[in-house]
Every structure is written in structure tokens, then in C-alpha cells.
Image: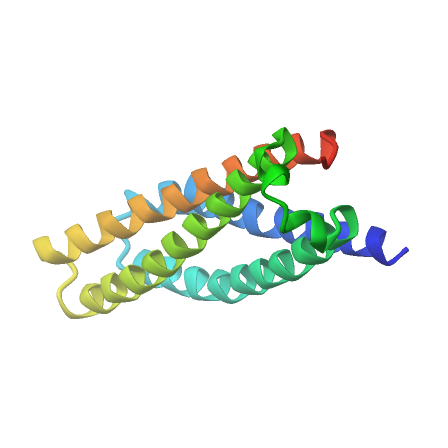
Length: 164
């Protein structure tokens, strides 16, 4: 029963994380991007800050439940065997862990750059440097969303495969 609860929490956290990323990238930002209202930048910042909290909490739940789920499916001793990592399941697991690591690093970079872009927008909203920061933060945000979708795809492959 603990494993099933852990899997449920893992899937719910993934829904929250990926759903929030996609909403932000595909709905909120595109709708507000062309708005002449100066308050739209503040709205994006406020929503971004709120989602940052929800998103990182979701990622924390994903990491914890992911480790629990892995421990349930694959004994720790097996993870230490080099042959495990040469199996199809081991290769997929390594790919997923690599993508998660890359997504976490990209998320941190996005948060740092996004904060710099927000601060610059308050000081000089139309400056070329502000636009460049916003553009870079936006690209990183889209990269995080693509990585999250790639992780979901690999996760589906993993749960349809057998450890071995």
C-alpha cells in the first residue's frame, strides 16, 4: 500500500509540475506577451513566483517518491551491479536520471535569470538588456518544459519495462 501511495503522489506531483509549466508556457505568457498594459509584467512575475514555490515543492515530492518507487522496484544491491546499467531498464533509468539532473540545473538557471529579468524590468522595462534577459529566461523556461515532457516519456517506458 505504501508503494501505491508513493506512486500516486509521484504522478500527482508530475501532473502539478508539468501542467503548471505547460500552462505558463502555452497559455499565460503568450496571452500576456502582446498586451500594452504595463501590469502584465507584474502579473507574470507574481504568477511565476507563486508557481516557483508550487513547482519546487512538486519537484521535491517527485525526487522523494521517485527514490522510494525505485527502491521498491529495484533492490539497492542490483543498482550497484554494472550489468544492471547495461540492461534496457538500466539504460532508461540512467537516461531518466540524467534528464532529471539536467532539468533541475536548467530550472535553477531559469529561476536565477528570471529573477534578474524581473529586477531589470522594474528598473528599465524597455531596455535592450532587459529584453535580452527576458528572452533568455523564456528560452530556459521552454527548455525546462521540454525536458519535463522528455522525462515523462522515459518514465512511461520505464513503467512498461521490467527491471533486470
